[in-house]
Image 1 (cartoon, rainbow, N blue to C red):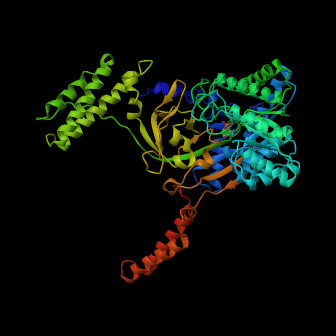
Image 2 (cartoon, helix red, strand yellow; image 1 turned 180 degrees about the vertical axis):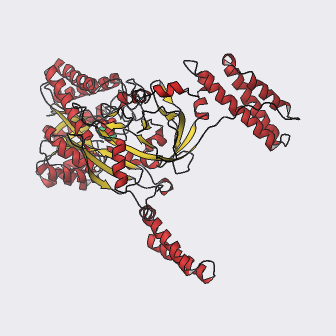
Image 3 (cartoon, rainbow, N blue to C red; image 1 turned 90 degrees about the vertical axis):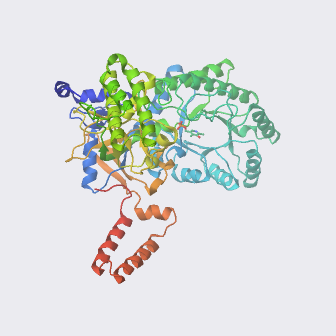
Length: 639
Ligand SMILES: *Cc1c(COP(=O)(O)O)cnc(C)c1O
C-alpha cells in the first residue's frame, strides 16, 4: 500500500505526467494547480482556460444529467486555422506556386453544428466539404456559402445525385464529381449533355502503396474503390473522344484513416504526383491534387508509429506533402496544382469530450493468508498454502505457475465432489492473495514478464461507468481503439486504485480495459477512491471523430445529452447549444414500439390489478405516474 509521505508529496503536476495529458492533448487540455482538467482552447494564449468541473457544475445547475458529450467550439476553429496555417507556412517556405484547400468529409461527424461551424469559421480559409452520398451532398449544398470552397463528391452517384451536382455547378459551386468506378462516367456524360452543363471531373486512383494502421484497407491494389492505371487511361481516351478532356480537373486518392507513419504518407504522395503528372502529359486540364484523409491523431501521446499514435507533427505532415508534390512535378516541369486534403479525424477529434460519473465500484480486495489451515484440509490446498508462504521476489513467476496449477486441480476436485464449498473458497482466497502479492513484488521490476501481463487486470477494481461504450465510444468496442481517459478532478490527490471501466449495458463487451500507455497499452487505469459524499467524474477525450453516429442502441441506451460551449478571451464561457439526449420513449420508438400503446396496455394491466384486489386505485395512479415518468426520462442512470 501507499505510504503516507508519498501521498503528501503528490500534486497536480504528477497527475499531468501520470495521465500523459500534455502529450496527447495537442495543447487543448491541461491540469490546473487545484487538480482540475482545464480546457485551453487558444493555442497562443494559455491564460484562457476553463475548468471542466466548473462546466459540470453549470450543467448540473441547469438540470442536465451525466453522461454528457461536451463540445468546445473554439477547439474546432483552432484546428481548422492550425491546418491552414501549417500548409500556408510550408508552401511559403518551399516557394510552392499554388494554394491549399481543405475539405471536411461529412461522414467523420455529420452533426449539423459541426458542419455549420466548419463552413462558418472555415469560410475565412475557404474550407470546403466532401460528400460521399446523396444525403451528404444535400447537406453540403445547403450549408456551403463560399464560392471558392471546394465540394468534392465521392461515392456512388445515381442520376438524381448527378443532376443535383450539375445544377450546383451551374449555380457556381466549385463541385467535383470524383469517379470511383469507370462505369460512372457514361451516366455523367449523358446527364451533362441532357442538362447542358459541363462537370468538373476527378478520378479516384488505386494506389499500389499501402499503409499500416487500423483503417487502411482503402489503399493498395485490392482496395474496393478507385481506378487502376489502365482504367484511368480508358477514362482519358473516352473523354478525349468526346472532346471533354478539359473537364478532367482532379486526381484523388484516400490511403485510409489514421496513418501513423509519415513514410507511408510520403510514398503515397509521390506515387499520386507521378500519376498526376502522367495525366497532364495526356492532355487533361487538371489543376487539383486531392490527397484524401489519413492525417492521424496522437491518441496515446507517444509520438510513435503505433496505431493509436503518429510519428509526425502537423507541420511535418504539411512540409512532407508539399515537398513531395513539388519534387515529383518539378522534375517533369508540371505546374503546381491546388493541393486538397480531406482531413476529418485530425480536424474534429479534439473537439468533443464524453463526461460521465461513476455509479459504484467492485473493489479487488486481497485477503490475508490464514494463520493456519483447518484439520483435514486436502493436500493440494496445503501445497497451495505452502507456495504462498514461500513466495518472494526471486520466485514470483514460479510461484504463480504453481498457484494456477493448484487452483485448477482443486476446482477439478470440487467438480467431482472431493472438495467442499468452504474448502474451495479457502483455496481461491489463497490464490488471490498470491496474485496480489505478485503484483506488489513485481513493482520492483522495471518491466513485467510478458506471461504475467494480465496480472494488472486480474487485480483491478471495476468502476461502473454511467455510459454506454456501444453508443458513445463504438471504436473502443469494435476495434479496440484506445482513447485517452482520465478523472477530470481530484488530480491534486494521488490516485490510489487501479480500475477497469464497465458500462451500464451489463454486456460483457461493454467495458473499457485498455488504456493509453507510453509503452503500449495499459490494462488498468489509475483512479481515486470513491467517496460517498461526492460524485466522481471521468472524461473520454478526443472522441469528436467517427464516434457519434456509429454508435448503436445496445440495451436501448440512447443518445447522450450534448452541450457545446464557447470560451471567451477572459476565460468566461457560454453554453451555446444544448441537445437533450434520447428519452426512453424515443429509443423505444426507434425499434418500432409505440409508447402510447405501451402506456395503454400497461394501464389495462394495472386496472386488472385493481379489479382483482392486488393494488388499490390510488396505488394504480402512483404506478402509472412512475411508468409515464420512465417513458419521459433519460435512458442513463439518473440520480
Ligand atoms: C473517411 C474518408 C476521409 C477522412 O479520413 P480521415 O483520416 O478522417 O482524415 C477522407 N476521404 C475519404 C474518401 C474518406 O472515405
